Amino acid sequence: MASVWILQNTRDKVSWSITGNLVFNQDKIVKLSKAMQAANEQLALQGGFALNKIIREGASMNTIYTVKSLGIDPSTGKELFESRDGQVTYMWNPRDRVANGIEQPKFRGNFSTLVRYGSLSMNASFGYRFGGQIYNQTLIDKIENADRLFNVDARVFTDRWKVPGDVALYRGLNETLTIYPSSRFVQDENTITCQNINLSYDIRNPRLLKSIGLESLTVTGNTGELFYSSSVRQERGTAYPFTRQFSMSLYAAF
Image (cartoon, rainbow, N blue to C red; front, top):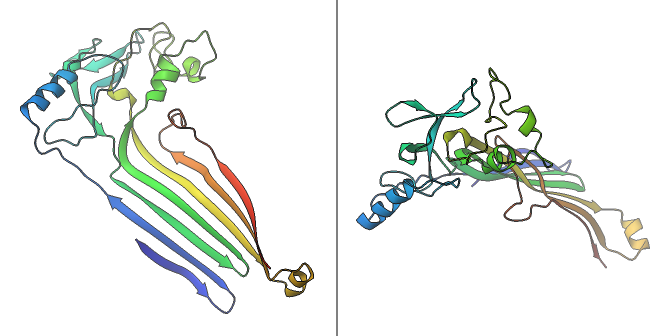
């Protein structure tokens, strides 16, 4: 944790400070029992649309294992994969799973800034994480597995393959087979969030305060989760409700 004063003028009652911290985290599985190794290798051979949590010696426990995707074939609208021996194929094979990222940021932390100008003060806090990857399940649920006969994400019709020659991010509209974990859905995550902003104003007018029987009066406004900016576009609030909070308070001393 470190703090820096950008501006400090006691006479004019003006100040500005910034406080922040940076955390670096790296993990590696050193040793697994023979039974655990066998169980994880068996898990790695299973299919299914869900991303299996596989752990292996020498790797991070947050490693994302998927089959390497070569994108959508412009001639057919099908997804192309690369096998372990470097062959190009339409067939997804769990044996071809390789490490395609780590679902943990290299750097994370928080920073805040406090600004004072006379009777007015603002305190804002932010969180950030950079350098990791994430498996974007939203792209699967809302685009490739979406039923186009119902209300769907606009990308179902704008970004999916339609006719031969299309260079598209997502499979053809007529492709309805199960989506299996591939590197196509692994994305770099760099995120910053505004966790809280607090504005406060001290009313310093003795005559006014005395006329209403007060010694001091402070008006405060507060907001939480004001904004969220990320390199990954995905749904929020599906596992736990996401809300923005706004509040105002009056603090009075008699």
